[in-house]
Length: 259
Image (tube, rainbow, N blue to C red; front, side):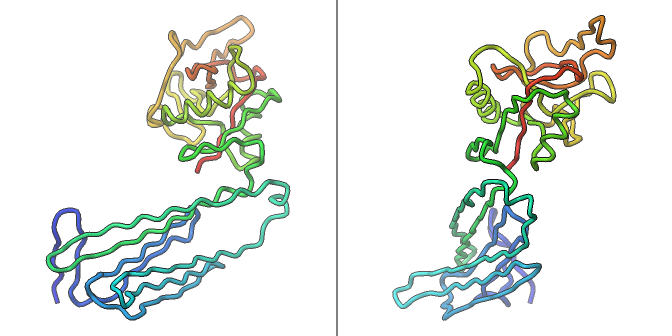
């Protein structure tokens, strides 16, 4: 039987499959799985169960005698932790539930989306968490830019990349907690490959980060007598503005663990 297209904003509904529950899941964490069922078609107890690579999913959706839809789901993940992870503080996962309804002719579709976000196990207690932004740590043991990059990577993080005003504010808060005086710290961008073409430590153009707040007069690639290579590494001031600085000078640096 041919499928029919619903109104704008809805999905394609196949009449052959009406009355069944459709579900999908993503094994990677952050994890999300979706349960969909047409509320006007009685379901006594439609349930599914699946497992793969140490992850198992059980889901059930049914309508009780009073007409209320009840959806239950369980996601279980088992893995062997690396011994190095045991040294780090475990953070509790965050949960979210979103329920929406769509109409397509005489069929109403109820969609329930469960989201589980598990923080990386390797984020230590000294990383500060900002909801919907990320985890940040200001390292006060000064290093040059390359060693700072490697240090962040060892912690399962990377030199910070500012993607939004909210992230800039989070970084400023972390820096202010260290000192209210003016100072600068390494973050994750550079123009080592070609002067003026700034890339992030993730290999993307800096402009694609979505938030580039240069300090007035920067970047200037300032060359000093003892620094013939100029300024090829990125840094951020505690007022949130960014600059190009010398790579071989030891500085404080900011690590970021993305959500």
